[in-house]
Length: 160
Image (cartoon, helix red, strand yellow):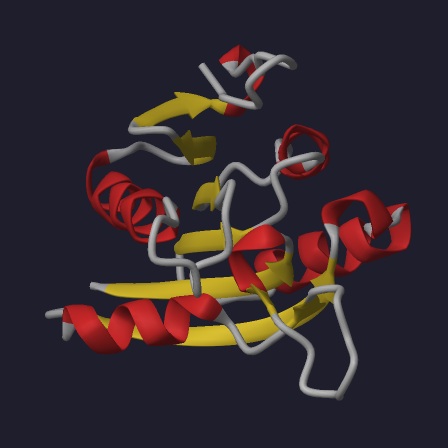
């Protein structure tokens, strides 16, 4: 089995700035690289750092780039790490790709944090691409749902 991971940014990839006197986060290297190193997976993979943006900054042009990149992949199993604020919009943009299994995931807290949900969400996404049929899904908070059935609780941020 081969999985292509695509980094778009978001909280999962946030890290403290490398500059001095900085207080804000920056989008760093793909968190999934560190997670896969710990996992020592029995499948092959590639990680494509396509975007490094907060999901609120992702544009239609960015989504088109993501769409075109996925359409041109040889791999039919794709996991996208994405910011949680607009993952549903991206999923909707990608829904016409019908020949691949696409799972979008992210994290409520950066992977660098000890209490991050990143490892759980990526792990669920990896398991999901092994058993799902072609389509677009969102994996968050221990669930994997078809993109069009996902809702978000705006009070606590959880997807259900």
